[in-house]
Image 1 (cartoon, rainbow, N blue to C red):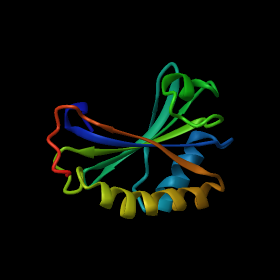
Image 2 (image 1 turned 90 degrees about the horizontal axis):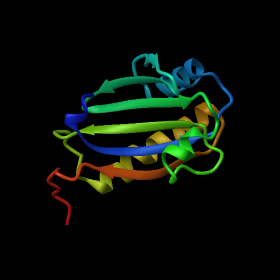
Image 3 (image 1 turned 45 degrees about the vertical axis):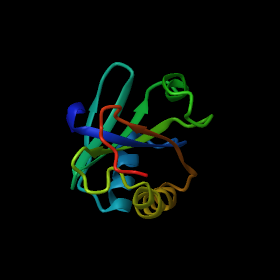
Image 4 (image 1 turned 135 degrees about the vertical axis):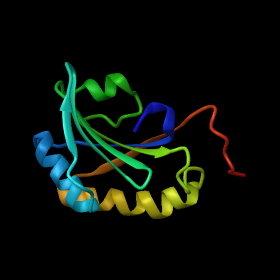
Length: 135
């Protein structure tokens, strides 16, 4: 998803010794997503896919402590990040209740079960210029 389309991102983190392709396959199966497209750069590798205005991005930096140095809200010991990005026109982009009670309440335990680990929701990011309908 292009950065200019993203209005909200939910950040999850976990610790896994699995290689990225295995993590991505488990996430895709658990969440009933299409196969995640894999890519890499000098500090990290990732897999991603977009479904219905949500992009799922699983990132695994090559160095274990990199996630925490990039984002201090990442729980200690986590080496894999999962970002769920919302397009600005997603029908629930501003609906905190739906995000927490429906999306995260489903995603977190399914990923935890598939990978046999604890999954932490550690941060919500909102684009500053995005109009919010929240009260």
